[in-house]
Amino acid sequence: MALWLWCLTFAFHSLYCWWIIGYGGAKWVEGWKSFFLIDWIALDWNAEQIRMYVLIIWLASLVYFILGIIKPGLRLF
Image 1 (cartoon, rainbow, N blue to C red):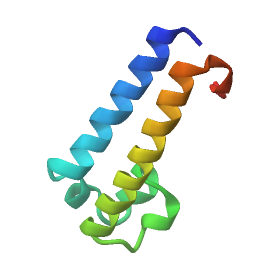
Image 2 (image 1 turned 45 degrees about the horizontal axis):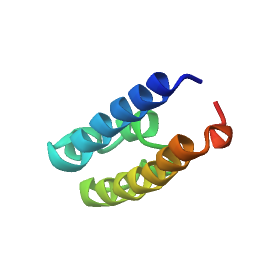
Image 3 (image 1 turned 180 degrees about the vertical axis):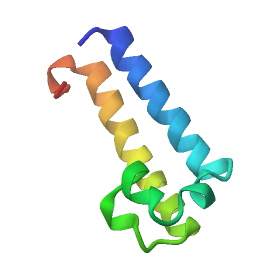
């Protein structure tokens, strides 16, 4: 995958996470929508639990993004 596409993918993922964490996206996603937009385990979660989950996933994807920048062979797609 080209570097620009790798960065663009991470940028879109970051915008999504930023919306969930900081701009009321977690409140909007609560309930049945969380199954499709977060994960199947988030069906019964409240907004704070969704925000925490997305924050942890975002931090993990940041580490993966940095590793993918440093060593492109680690990118799985």
